[in-house]
Length: 362
Image 1 (spheres, rainbow, N blue to C red):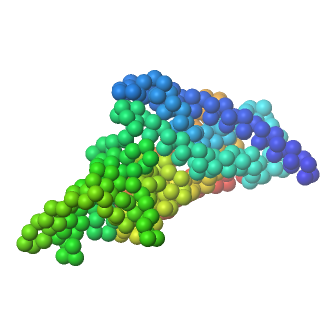
Image 2: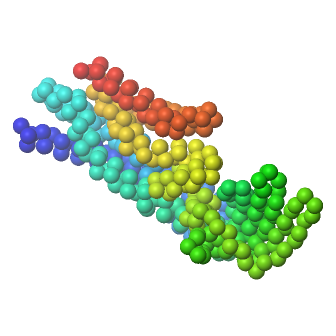
């Protein structure tokens, strides 16, 4: 009996995995072609067709990672639908195989993919995305220095800082700082041409060079010039780079956790990073929930439907799940809900839908 179950797992898993691979290739191709067309329409400076192709290539691992829940759902629909068309699922059910056992077989097949996708999202995708954004910024701006649009604002304690650009080594370029005193009044305004991360006397911070300071008091303002000033800070080049170049949703869990801890230490609101953290952490659970819905649909309302109907249903369900995520994510930041609640509501809806549908089919 065990060997028969193993053979069943292999047969179901092979059908589902082949379908997932085909769906992944199709959607990755589309999800790469359209961004490439967009990039080719935004060429300027040294950013030409070769750079656009490299940008899309470096960001492809991130696209694959983000597509995985939807692709696994579509692959399960197509793979199990093929078995249903050949009456193999009917035979298995008549042989006493429960719906839970069928779901388990699909999970066994998808588990290695989820592990690989998790590794992709934690290492290759963030690294490739950072390379892509740096390449695009440097090429479009025609040099090694990356200008950060209107500047990157950062607060640490009673110091507010604006960084205009980053050089290829991660050093700050064109820095402005403003410090308040204990009464909340502006006490210091500082500009620096560059800043590099160093360690002095066991303390980490930024060595600001080409510094001009204006010290303010109730009676006077004093202007001072320094060749260099050491500013102790917990802001590392890694935090500065990921904050300046990458969206929170494209960071690895370790980087998100580091950013969240840093912002909490500075009494800042890390809601955007917490939401991204929980979305990444819960992605495998969300994927399995979508697969549960796929199994329920194939054994129930989509059992005798055409492949086109199944694909259309899959697209609608996938879009519905995405819209729920897009709804509760911003709502969590607006109404100050815990990020894990906003993340788990769409996933819980998905699992409830799958469980209720499976109960109906027995």
